[in-house]
Length: 470
Image (cartoon, rainbow, N blue to C red; front, side):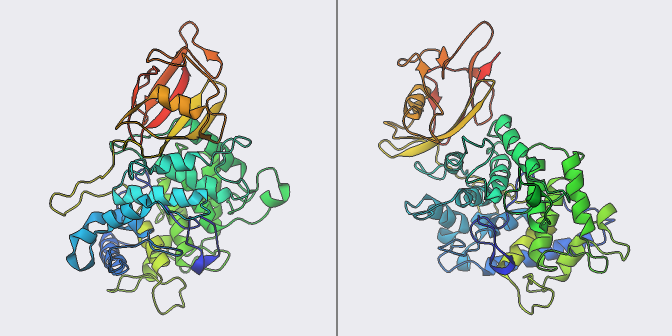
């Protein structure tokens, strides 16, 4: 997810993303672009994205790839499992992408946090539980491994602020199969604090870290990262009325071009920047076709995007002067026009017998895996990915905590647990002992908190939250 200038920028995760919580309904009838025009744009846009599928069923591959198509397809109402090359259901896009993510060699020899964040956002949109790709692949845990102990709230090196933005988008946006927030709010709040600290004086954001640097904070913001950052705030629970979101909205308004509805991005008006900005507005529930985003000339950012689309071909061009469509512009444009942020909940498939979700819910004995763990003692939050090799199809909380003491990334997540053996109630963790009405509680995948016991059953892909309190 490195951030790069326009046409070549969308590779790892310097590119888009969106969320189930981001997906909105179609724009209202009083908008300048009509519901009928939006429906046509979606239909034609999906047709173009279908044309990007490889003969083997793939969208993703080495280097630059089109896997962001899953977020746009979902936003437009098309399930990835329904997308097949030549009607060959054995090569449907979802199955091929899941195998791609589960492969031992993915994502390569020098992965960065945005590789996993990209995977989360697109797996979720494709109807693949990102924590349960396979018995050995848990993308939530993979992302937790990049938590910065020295700078809590950042994921990956803080200089690449982009990684933290997409951590919030992915961890907040990729909800459970039941639609629940799977990670603790305290983790999202820590990321939100970092997003706020990086907001420039002009109300927007840029791809690199600005926190603590007056010169950087006084520098110009970027349309794209402003859209992504405001989306990160809103999908993490920050309301659209929050002053920081209001300032971001004002920044985008200040860049709106009256005659076209385009945003005047650093590299000039283009579909990708407009798409990211509109997705940010969508994520915050701000209509991009009314109020501040309807110009005196009667143009909106959605008008600009629709004008960039070739019809009936369905692809979007990157620059207004281009004469052919761009894959990445088409993905960014379609997802935004469809009303989504940076991912979308998977639609119900039309393929007979195909489930909405696929997931691996059990461990494979002897197969190494990882689990996402947070430990909140009421004062500080520890976040880590715990590596372990289960002996059976399930494991226990005690086994996870024992593994965490020596095989957690980052380290220090668990420094001690009492008792050290058995299946009983955990009476102390990291030196914090149960006292009075306060004790250690366990929550799985954002579910109800229960008394933490060593014998509690842990399944593949469970997101484990331990919290001290009443």
